[in-house]
Image 1 (cartoon, rainbow, N blue to C red):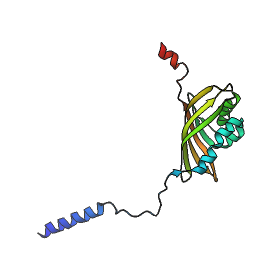
Image 2: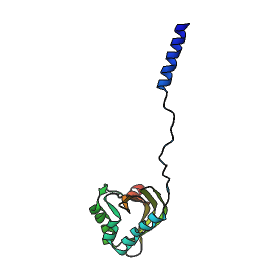
Image 3: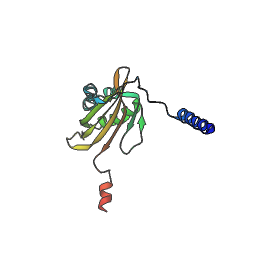
Image 4: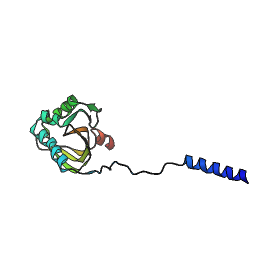
Length: 164
C-alpha cells in the first residue's frame, strides 16, 4: 500500500511540474485601432499634390524606403520610384480624385483604403480603381510606407481577347 501511495504522489508531482503556468495579467495595454481624422487630413494632400503637378510634394508624403505596387508592373521602392511612377502621371497631364472609404490608425501604423478616378487632360476618364496605403509615423510625421492600387477596368487587350 505504501508503494501505491508513493507512486500516486510521484505521479501528482510530475503532473503539477508539467502543467502550464497560470495566466498572469499583462502590464501591457492592448492598442486599439481607431478612425484617424489626423491621418486622413495628411493623406488628402496626395490628390492635391498630383492635381497641382507637385511631384516634390507627392514624394515628400512617402517614406524613403516606401514600396509601390502598381498594376501590371513590378514592385518598386524608394523616392526615385515614387518620382518615376507618379511623375509619369503628372507628365501625362493626369489629375485624380480619391474617395476614401476608411482611414484607421493603431499606434504608429495606419492604413487608408478607397477608390480613385484618374482624369485625362481632355476631361475623359483615364482610369478608375481602388487603392490601399499603409502609413507609418516616422519622427512624428505620417508617411506612406506601402502603396498599392489597381484598376477596375479590364486590362489592355483583355476585351479584345474575350471577344475572340
